[in-house]
Image (cartoon, one colour):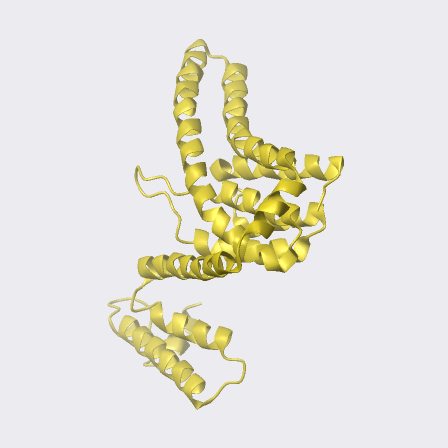
Amino acid sequence: MDLNFIQVILVIIVAFFAGMEGILDEFHFHQPVIACTLIGLVTGQLVPCMILGGTLQMIALGWSNVGAAVAPDAALAAVASAIILVLGGQGKDGVSSAIAIAVPLAVAGLLLTILARTIATAIVHIMDRYAEKGSFRGIETWHIIAICMQGVRIAIPAALILAVGAGPVRDILNAMPTWLTDGLSIGGGMVVAVGYAMVINMMATAEVWPFFAIGFVLATVTDLTLIGLGAIGISMALIYLNLSEKGGSSNGGPSNSGDPLGDIIDNY
């Protein structure tokens, strides 16, 4: 699919804001589900890009900065894979290939992130000098420059992919053999499962598991059977018992009537 000039500019703008939001984290433009949706909206490929963004979001759930460890760049992965999906012109059939491409792009984006943050360290020292002079305008100027640098970090790779054009991207995707595309599809599904498992591993507590079981049943079972109803019933029982233990352990706190749900309502 060939994009017109206005669409190219809009895609670059989306990429720019996605890069900035990777630092600002205010409107979450860097999240794959939002970045891919916006690119699909401006290019007229909304549904395939939404599918791509939703799938990549499951992978990115397991990406987080912990201490000095920097997570893979979800913004670059989302923007670049969405552009490749649109240029490839394969629609929903190209989602699996785009997902497989997104993972190495996220690792490459990690290098760009480290480079940008290294440069930002020097900018902080420049802002310190302006602070010593009492120049608020100088501090604000360099603050804006540092944030824009994060946007350019994503906008330039996006512009380079757009400059290559739809033809080469489509030829590369069409030249991929069936065994490779099928393998990439399976691998992409496994990566999604691993990303979600990492989130579950971080959140796994005795209080959370019942809610997970209820959500799993409601999300996967369209026609509730006795097994599904049993899982929901057991989960509700565990939640009730957990609330009972918390209500019974209070000393000098709110009244405990023996009914934890009733106590919660009375306390509010």
